[in-house]
Length: 488
Image (cartoon, rainbow, N blue to C red):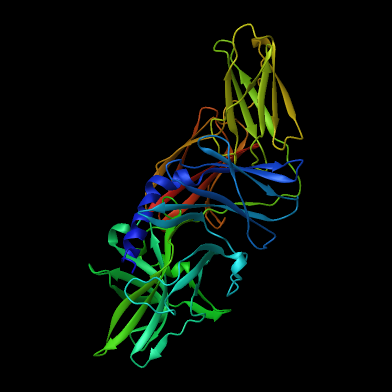
């Protein structure tokens, strides 16, 4: 018999978000298409989580395909994904590991191209296969879960599950029923000991199919409060369910969404219910492998490669050569070197976010000559070469000096008047805009010319609901994107 650990395990995995999510899903970045027809994906993961990394990709809305990354160093992994220009590519990461002696998964959500229901399983994100013949309190092959899946769009969450029985009857007798549940736990609302769940059931009056808020007794027995509807269908021996994200986020106890790490804890479970004196007595059947699900979207869709643009600035007093790298497709460089004197030296980026200008700085020792040759390539094919002049008389006054910089409070309170400071600006036209995570522009904070001394902007959060937003600052070929959160 399994011990009843579902809620404890989901809570424990959710608590990982505060410590591990930044490391599990850190700095996922892409190159341009190489001569081998591959995009190079790189990311950092924490070595403390002993498990198996994998990378999955989908081309033009097709089925997900898995590739195995390899380890470049202690922290950095690399995966090679086939790509042809013009294709629409989605990609995501997955980590399988153990926690408290039980299997667990951390992965990016599989995003669907439409809200068609039910989606095909090969376009959903497979979570795991659960062992058969196990149970928590009550065994039945109807309640014995095998495989589980999850997916999302901007509007809905989707789950699917399989069981040993091959079907999902909700009624056994007039007094005996089954319930099939996918729990959704906001990692920022764990202190309330509340889960939300899509429930497929048919207990008369007491528990019909729908979206519910669950609270658990000290014995682990749930109580249900209905908050909305779901769409449910048994197809091909699998149970599919879907709910509106807006119904979840409308409940104050769900917590802020998107939360700090854009992650939820997901797990499926089954219950038996016997009506005794008109009241249900629940028995816990089975639970699936829990997953910590990150909801960052990763995609690549370009008609051709865009070569990076390079700027530089050199100080003869300090020997500091400042280099700015900007790529319109947000590709990271596979080659980043500078040649001066008699040597070639690798350049290290100050940031691994290539959505805007990234700085590469190096100190040029005295006596290294009058010039330095800067070489970048985002595909190992096309080399972009720039000559930096190391004498004060020949310094390039038009060079990119520093990437755009932004200072702002985060998180923000609802109705707060926040001050945003922008630095490292040129005197050229500049735009600062606020977007939601659907890409909809909510406000233009500034449209004018930049001030090299810095620019102070004001953001009023009145009328903006709790959640995550994007500040996007654009000037010339440079762009800065900053995530910020509004909390009630």
